[in-house]
Image 1 (spheres, helix red, strand yellow):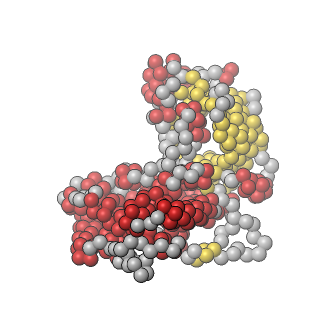
Image 2: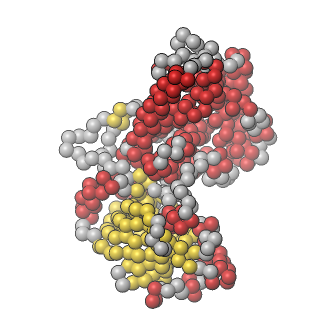
Image 3: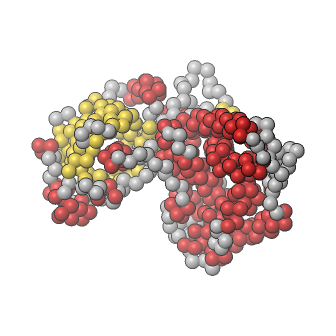
Amino acid sequence: MPTEVELKLAVPPEALRALRQRLRQFGCPQRQQTDSRYLDTADFRLARRQAALRLRRSGRRWLQTFKTGEALAALAARGEWETPAPGGRLHPQLLRDSPLAQLLGKRGMQRLAPRFATRFLRETWQVERGEALIEVALDRGVVQTVDGTRTEPLLELELELKRGEPAALLALALELQGGAAQQAGDKVQSTRPGAEPELALRPLPESKAARGVRLAAGISPAPAKANAEGFSECWHEDDSAAIALRAVAAHAADLVAANVGGALASDEPEFIHQARVALRRLRSALRMLGDGGDPFPADLGEELRWLARSLGAARDADVLLLETLPRMESAAGLTALQRRCLRAALQAERLRARAQARSALASPRCSRLLLRLVQWSASTAPAGPPLTAVAPRLARRAQRRLAVQARLFAAQGHCAPDRATGKAARPAGHAERRARRRRRVRAPVARRCAVAQAGRVGTGRRSAPATAGRTGTDARSARRLNRVGMRPPG
């Protein structure tokens, strides 16, 4: 099967000029106005099967292209079949080597019609890096419905591998990102004087076809869910721990990148929350699988911690104002005026936290983190035993830790906040909640490997996490309430 391997990067409008200056090192680009029409059935049968069919005119030449594997992935390897399309019309017989007919059937083929279109100016460069040959394409234009009533701006950089290994794509992306600032904890050390500024070239998992389907169907961008099933299904039982961990890292990077656009453009808090959940699941997997002979880069772990803290503050502020405060107001015995003043103060706190989270997501530091995460996930994993061999040990260790922390939690009881300090007796609830978060990644490993311990680890999934989660949330809420001048009820 012919395969296309490419890396897509979102380009912020303010970074376009600096990016084009960097691309000049590769010579003068070839420029072509490109118009594409994407065909599908009325119920988007191809899109639902992660496939796309398009007719594209580049200059005077018409091409028809069928792609499969249109899944959410920044570094994507897709099946691609491309042939000439004389007269700008679809010629299905020229795509007989592809699975197009199999996916559509005879009736489906007859129901194909244009559903959306793209129109953009493409500038391309051919870049050699060692034995690799990469086509760099800068696209500027729009994605739109057929009638042009709904449009979405298009500004992205595509790195397509023509020859060589995928690692070359990530190396070139990091080179174009520039900066290479050395980071320590939360502080970014300045680059050398006169160095080029770092650009926020964020990995872009959503393809042009996926954006077009959204527009054609009239669907607003939705948060990419970081559910446990997605993380447990991105690897196989026969994989080693190192391979499984790389699959989890790639999935987490794609989810964070997929939620960045919505978090920057929308006030919907779920985008930030799902990005935070993806980071949390990745860090849990690192603690579970990363203690073997394949250490995760320490500086990359520090960057994950930085981004998780940045997003966590915004999530805590959302939960406090929307969920916790209504429960606490009645117990506090506040007057209506006091409630309004408190809500105003917490809303201001929430806006500050969200602005900081958005600033972190839009920063070059976040983009570099995601690129490095994808780069690490694409690196060669060392050999090791399959997960089927280590799952029993992982399950037993998870159960022991959970049992110890559950006993500690039960012994200390509910962690009520102290009225004088606003601080909560955090350790028990926090430890319990952390243990269960980690177990949500571990338990699917054991269950899929048919390990007996998985059944015991998976019991009591709902009530205890909810109790422990609320305890931790109340503790953080107490600290925030204390900062705005209100002591929590005791």
